[in-house]
Length: 242
Figure 1 (spheres, helix red, strand yellow):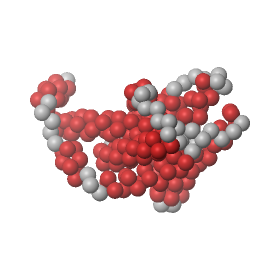
Figure 2: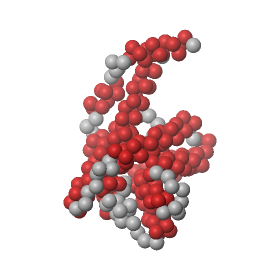
Figure 3: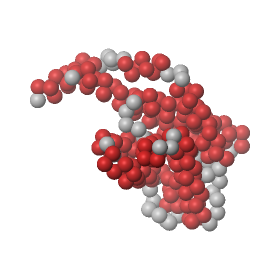
């Protein structure tokens, strides 16, 4: 019982770190002005429209959470009785993800690349950081992010391989972002959906595959019992006695 509580807590501490790394990548991609990452295309469009009073004036992180909640609702509709209640934990993970995006957007306000080469370096750095974060998040083995959970649900029902479904879902999100740009602004907004977005669709997946093969150290970290375990043992003993 005690070991399980410790493992669970440590696993989710590392999950939080992984989400933070992912959101740093998301924020840096947005700051590149070459196009945001796929997961933030729609939230970025709505956030920009909100500044012009076309929709509620929410942050990218808040719109990201709304999108994630819709993706979880989509999983429920697709899987129905096969939907596992534990997957509702995705709502909490999605909420934390949205908050961390806003935090890192605030922390990266100083990042304002002007020259094309600066924007290209910023976009590449953002996609690399995002890919590393995703690889770590997946290895944590906790509940998946809604952005992965939705294509997993479609894959389970349709029998189509997950990578193919993931590509289709990502493409659909980008297309919806372009449609929303025309609906709100009457033109394509290249700083939201640009060459950087297309680059991210391929490069992030490549980074995840490369990094995913070199995470033996992270596996050892997951299995590690932190130095503060005596405090967690005390909490576990208290809960167990209750």
